[in-house]
Length: 353
Ligand SMILES: *Cc1c(COP(=O)(O)O)cnc(C)c1O
Picture 1 (cartoon, rainbow, N blue to C red):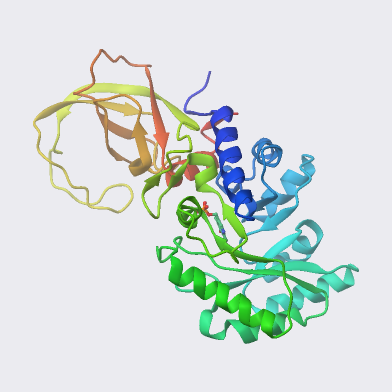
Picture 2 (cartoon, protein in one colour; picture 1 turned 90 degrees about the vertical axis):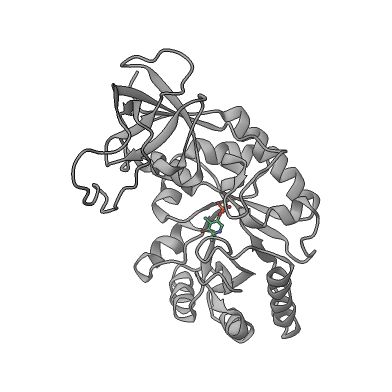
């Protein structure tokens, strides 16, 4: 067996997908299952589709192409607004694409028309988080304009919150999006969805406050981890034991808790801070910043604390661990979204599905 390994618990993932799709469908909400954190793993997409997800979402065209090549039928949504240089790939491989620029919509329309088809788009509105989208005060005109482009089929409008500015989805910004949708419809433009939310907005479905006209959610973190980082929630009706990271101890020694010598910057350019707790038993595990976000490692054993990491080494304080550790022992962790993202992306971490 090789370490580090990332071991999935498919039963818990299935549980999350079923519970969330049941809840969303109960509200007439179409569910886009986002697989980007797992680099578009085809097995994951298959599980999503078999357990209630309506559309597979990913931010990278490479992942969508790989899923297609592995027999996943889709439909597929490209979540990251496309580069002009990838528009041909988008038209050939993507069913629905998020867009936030008229120029891009025009180029997509032209490419789609030359392929003898119409490309479905969701036009993104920025209701405050400052990532993608037309600023809400200008949204109605721009989106009406996009709907007139030859080769374009306006599938819906959408917004993304909580990811960049950390703005929390609430009744104010969801109603703002719903009103923009209403005004566009009053101008005689029809479309299917108002794509209101990612995981940060799931709590509004759970507590039944989401406005009725919001009828699509694009969910990643909640399906795969059962958590919502923006609102700092672990959902009670979901499972959080979906992934376990297994790492191996390569050094085990008692050392001071404060470095000896003059302090400059660490391997990542940070100035590390240390608390003097005297001598402590430390374990080094063979994983580092290249493979995980050390702040996102959650030890499964009591009495283990993640101290600090450089690119390939992570140092733990194991003094309070109840039991005896030895070199070669395997220590297990849960991961936050950011740690999972890096572990999935690192080729040095073996994936066990
Ligand atoms: C990543 C992403 C999502 C999913 O976000 P989660 O917080 O993981 O639910 C939804 N929409 C867009 C545009 C995204 O990029």
